[in-house]
Length: 184
Image (cartoon, rainbow, N blue to C red; front, side, top):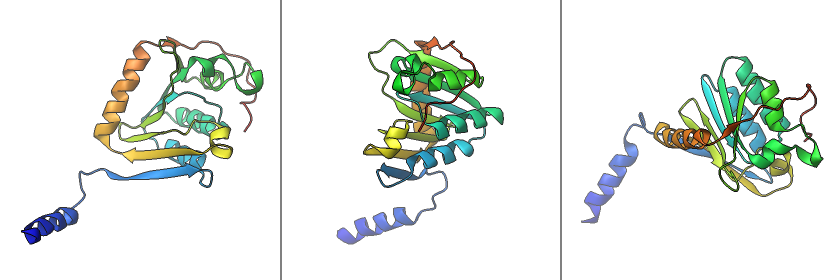
C-alpha cells in the first residue's frame, strides 16, 4: 500500500513547474542584506509597485521607488499616520514627503490605530512582506524577516487588500523643498 502512495508523491515532485509559483526568497536581519533584496525587486519592476508601509525611512528603498517612478513604473504608496507625520529624529521631512516630492501618489491610512503592513506588490506577480520595516533600523539594528513570493494569485489578494486600505485612506499632500531623506 505504501508503494503506490510513494510513487504518486514522486510523480507529483517530478511534474514540470510551469504555471506553479517559484519558491519564496527569504531574508533575515541581522546577517543578510534585506534592504538590497527589496531594492533589487523594485529595480526589476516593469509596470506597477503598490506599497503599504508602517515605518518608511530607508534611503535606498525610497530612492529605488523614485527611480522606478522615473522610468515609468506606476508607484503608489499607503503609509501609517505616524510615518506621514515626521521622519526620524523629529524631522518633518518624511519618506511620504520625499515620495510626494518625487511625484508619487501617497495616501495615509487613518482609519485604523496602526497601519502595520510592510508589503509591496510588484507587477501583480510578486509580493514582498514580513516583519521588515522599510527602515535603516530594520536592516542594521533589529531582528527582522522578509519574504519575497512569486505568486500571481497571492499577489491578487494583497492587491485587493491594498485597494481596500486605499479606499479608506486620505491623500498625503504636504511637500517641502527638496532636501535629504532621513539618514540611514
